[in-house]
Length: 290
Image (cartoon, rainbow, N blue to C red; front, side, top):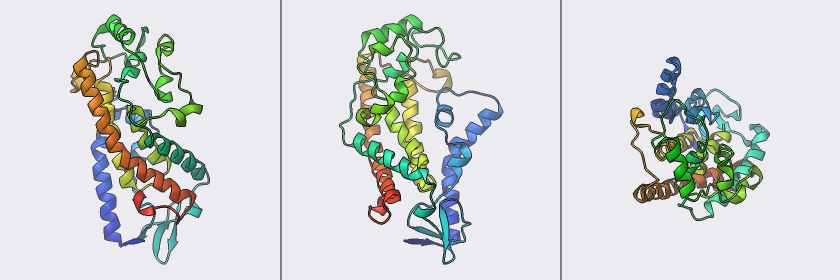
């Protein structure tokens, strides 16, 4: 058990807020200007964790904070505030059970590096209404459709697949469902890697905020590749394309996928350990969650 006096935990709190402000601040400015961002908005709209929630600091397990005001999931103990598993919301145990099963299953599979980001192309295949209508398609509608028809579509992620157009769905190698999520997810999938952030904040307030920020930072980098490899022309936003319609572009994408899978591995491990702490306090490797 780590004891932090008030200056120590306030320093951690300030460091966390300063770290995430590089993303939350610009997002708020864009909202004030009613300005959409086709890459970064996703991290605050598709994911339900609001900027103020991302900025909030929680110490997580096995940390006692002197002078910290009590908050949901925490209790006062001898003049310090500490995370109390008995005080966590009841729904958190069910969440932790599912998240641990999913993360362990995903981590146990080899990464598949042959999807090449075609999920974004399948979302605009043969439709006059692409999701980011204000952003042009690099190859035009016909050129985009030709890429989908020329390459195998192999998406394993249900939440990406559900945005496929009706014409694209039959072209996918499998038809992933929510019920098969644990059986299908694999660490090479960019969306599964971004979702590590979702599982981190879904376990709040038990998740140490530094871990949430680590997962968010990874999601930002993954999202950038996701959209650089998409059919959209994002050069006006400062993003050079990864042209997956070419062999060299596909090689760049696969290398980046592998790197993201390596970065996500320790985050999945820490979150799985946190799930174990929530489900059976004192029996898991609590230190791995910090």
